[in-house]
Image (cartoon, rainbow, N blue to C red):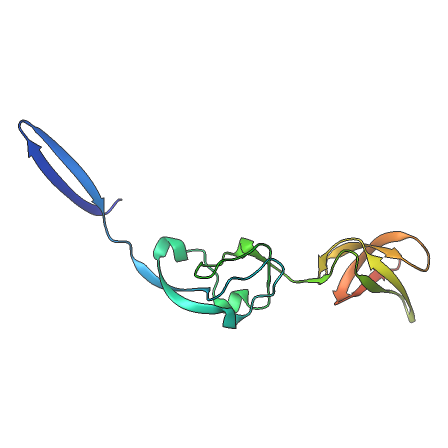
Length: 151
């Protein structure tokens, strides 16, 4: 159902009807107080409350929901933030040195290597081992740290 107001104008025998939309319902929503660049980590303090139309605010994240996530594109100040604009922060970036850990039972081996891709916590990335000169998949454990599951 469309809400609105009809206004009529009579010109001779013909009548012209114009539809004017009803005023949009306004709601309070969190929007960015500053521009956030791609790759930046968003914090709750980057947000302010603003009155938006219900349609614009419908899928916007709250400041608490966005806190600690990484911007996947540049986000403009004053705009609501949607889930697709953010992702878990990458703890490993392509080309960065990483510490590779391999655990098997009580045995733990560590080696140095290089990340061949970006990855957030618990994501799989390709890494190159400086010690063995081999490339393999590893799981991101933390900043600059990956682990290989022993078979």
